[in-house]
Amino acid sequence: MSLIVHHLNNSRSQRILWLLEEIGAPYEIRFYDRDPETNLAPAELLAVHPLGKSPVIEDDGRVIIESGAIVEYLCERHGGDALVPGRGTEEHVRHLEWMHFAEGSAMTPILLRIYTARLGEAAAPLEARIAQQLQSHFEYMESRLGPSGHFVGDALSAADIMLSFPAEIAVMQGLAPRYPKLAGFVNMCHDRPAWRRARDKGGAYYGY
Image (cartoon, rainbow, N blue to C red; front, side):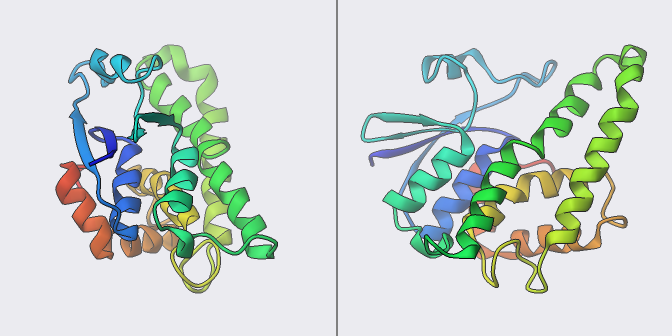
């Protein structure tokens, strides 16, 4: 099997497993566990890529990092055309926006919250700004979900798969009552047979 996913537990690489299950592409998983004290990825991932992060995939010896790049690559090379709106359409433009939003704008305050949580009172000067940014990004996502429950069009897209992680973070932070559409989106994702197969293969994922 030429396609390998280097999968870190409780990480954004879960989306890559889900995508591969959706498109039916064969793959192998190599598992890595976070340090229980620091929550950091193990040093073994450094042997795969110098940044030591996940997700990483290997395809016929080609190493690819960055969730968005991996998702686009897999859709183009491994049968995910149906998950990407046609080029030249308005939906494709929106799709590009959301693909980059998921790892750019949305993840910045999420990561700041994660990192500063270890600082205790030392993080107090940043907390109000982080909270405001989390709220504004989650509110933006809530307001842009369509009647179909998807971010682009009326069916699952690669952008939905990318956006599942920040949406899950909102729910895990206890914000489902404030953002019911996001909570419904997460439930829709988790109800998909491909998501459940990916969870079963990838292992426990934030308690889901």
